[in-house]
Image 1 (cartoon, helix red, strand yellow):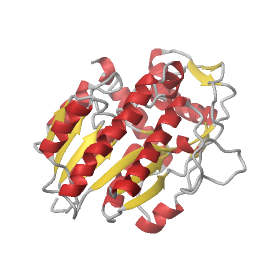
Image 2 (spheres, rainbow, N blue to C red):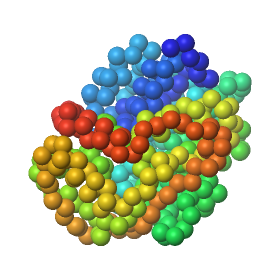
Image 3 (cartoon, one colour):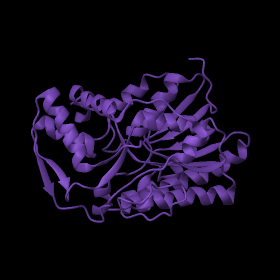
Image 4 (cartoon, one colour):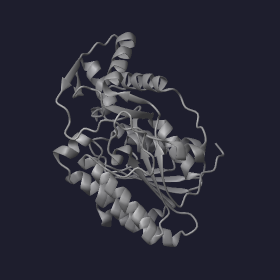
Length: 335
């Protein structure tokens, strides 16, 4: 490897989750002389198989702690003494937030508050090199009409769901603590992620799993809602490149430039399942989600101006890679 990362002791929250585990693998596979401490309560959307995968790295350690429990995480983090905190931990499924928002408030707001309070001390003790990175979502911006320009970092926050409201609240806490307490911070707002190891409640794995089981594919409303999709490893590579830029206060959008309607995405996946795997599930339209945003679209000009072009595969190549992984690892979520 022999590559240098600007931070040496990295505290990751939610590192056994979908995006967090991609980030941990990326840095441990490619950079020398770093330690990663992961805090993850291991809720329903994580897999013991993912933890086993990460445990193979000698410079990785894990604690099953709830970030909304200040006393528990305070001692754990101070003992590790990180120079970078990357907060992936979040309740993230919109439907679940509509059914009951309290877990989202506890994890996404109270948890972030706790991490920021601890970060004040870390900033004071490590003045030369400390960063708090909040992983956020494009859903905080609300939604767009088909003709409107994509979200920039200057777009106002207009969250539509309990989930996006908690993420917007957390982002506001981060920027306020940054300004008031001089905590160096980074907020990244990313579009929809896809790839291996994503929990089966999310759209793309749900389509694949239902296809393997011969179950109809549920589509909200008329299926014309538009999302921008980014491959998870491309997302975490941008995160890494941003960490190299010595940012002390900033917000950056991360997107895939792959806008597609839900119905076209489903048809794309079903076509691959039929041709490559002889699976032929059907589409079933269901009542629309409450407050369902029409369109998300990310403008990455600010991020690209800072980082330049980062090589990546096409959306279709990454989609086929993702489908193949789920077909080959159909038991990933059995434990």
